[in-house]
Image 1 (cartoon, rainbow, N blue to C red):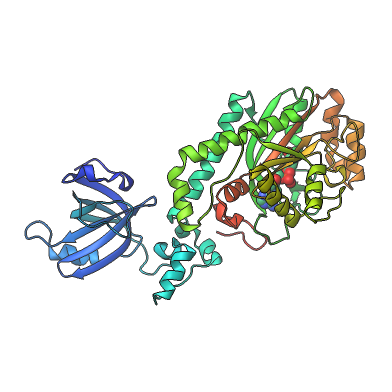
Image 2 (image 1 turned 180 degrees about the vertical axis):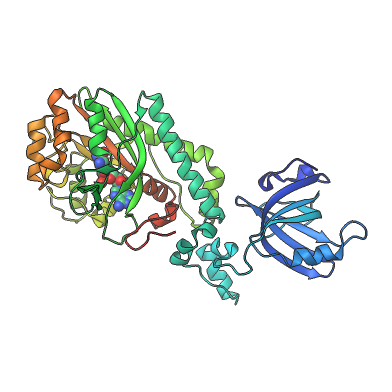
Length: 466
Ligand code: 4AD
């Protein structure tokens, strides 16, 4: 045999065929001197391989060699597909491979910090196993993250990062099809774009500088440069001090900026169609991945409408008030009131994805356009999944004098952003845009409880490695 078969493609129709597969030895079980089982895993799919001593075909030496393999070693297996009478527990594929040859391509250490099988169990499975008296170590989050290269071998994690890839793919494809084009803005910048506290400061060859908290200023400057409609997928740095389930110090920003003709609703229209297309695509193209995530971390599919619900901030405040929750009508919502409103919206409108717009100006960044009819409010919005924010967006101030005044009012040293403000002095079209947190979208779409699960190598206030 010299052509390879993927483990995930092995099936009953291949009965009696000779196949060649490569994967990791997930578990090795020696039954006797003449027989052993190896479960081989390739990218989340598993198949049981049976090695039996057969005179002149498979030696006892071979059985001994296989029995002594270290878990997670990479093996090439040549063998014949067979279909057992009983269903196979502990493997995704319902066929076996009767081994003729087995080579170890790369040996893993004999003791592992994480056993992939254990790391892949759901809470319910762990509880059951413990009740049945099984000796089992719960793999905690720090152990997982310290040994991320092994942790991400679980089916759920394989699923999460394929889903993440699909979110980026749909984002890019949708925007390209809507006449946006992709830009790349600097991550080393002179001044903070989103406010002073959460910025990583650094020395740039003797000049004070910082890591970009968003592409905000430069994506707007691209619009001043007549680019019309742009997007960017790139790293965003926030020196967050808070330990929450949803904040990272580095995350991936999906950013959009566009000219608008009449109204900031044009920006919300893009959000609406982009995200409905994205959720549809995830449901259609990532079925297996969503199932793998759900097996370890059970969740309900996201409820969303064909046309995304829009509520004004005032309407949201009123809904909370009617439910007995008082909030400052010109303040911001907090994690708790956002969640509460999410529940109320689900009950009333049957959706877990919606847009809240016309926020009080005082709680928005300096570059946000005040409402023309009432400057206490702003042409801005946040977007929520399951009661948690995934997007913030707005129309921007394109009048340089007002921009400078607003920056000053927000305590920003105008000198550090003077080239940004100057960009608006040579003619600037009305424009708006939004920023999405990639890790948050995946976390909330999959109903996961911690953003570290959806960041490949998360960066939080205590973690800079691996
Ligand atoms: O709300 P933020 O700070 O908005 C901006 O950066 C604006 N420049 C966007 C715009 O175009 N107006 O961040 C945007 C999104 C949030 O909605 C959230 O999903 C995510 O980025 N986000 C974070 N994700 C992980 N860790 C953090 N510390 C995050 N801070 C924001």
